[in-house]
Image 1 (cartoon, rainbow, N blue to C red):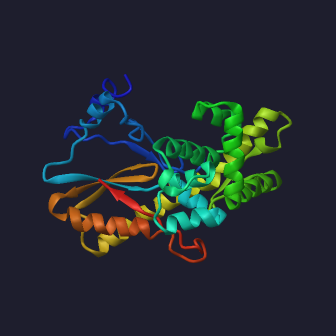
Image 2 (cartoon, rainbow, N blue to C red):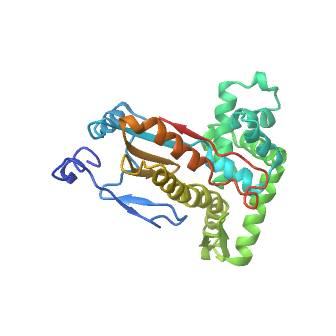
Length: 290
């Protein structure tokens, strides 16, 4: 009912679909999409993949998707300056395996896929403000074990741990958070007398600067940089931005211009955070293409 019944009647006379993007549709400053929402087309299930196959490029064109690799963790490294995380990204290592080394106390060559999976849950859990109980549920482990992982993570990545505490303290004082580019988000609930409202505001405040920098500010600047660069290279008529989905941009590109245009967009996206003031440690942003 969400996709198969609802979407086909929305196409125009040329069988094109036109979603509406709202500049500040989400509290973090992200775009949101409606009529239809094209940011939530399923991908994991077999049925989801079939629905995706219904979206095709114009004749003589290709759909090109460019997405940032682990952008939120990279932004967390930039904002916190955590030495270990910064080095992991600068050396081009796999961040989840590298964190597993620290959390499980094993050498790099002994990290199993299960350890990496668990480290991934912890990595994203901590920057989303997840507590020990939620971590226990996500890891499907005991509370004692989850607490142990949690404590060890914060101990091993002390730069990140200190930064997250600072965000909490500062938000309690000021009532708002700020992204790397100065976008503010207000949290009236952070001063609530009701514990669960206060805890929820704290959780959201921890993640707001990271998510707001990564999937609102960086991606919007990337769109502008790519557009300017495509125009300069005379490729604007061959390259059309169709969708922005969190950390990903989807373009429709004339087949003969795909290689050239893709290279230009990739460079623009990777070049958003190269200024020393905002990214003193020079943590690289990397973009994958499909």
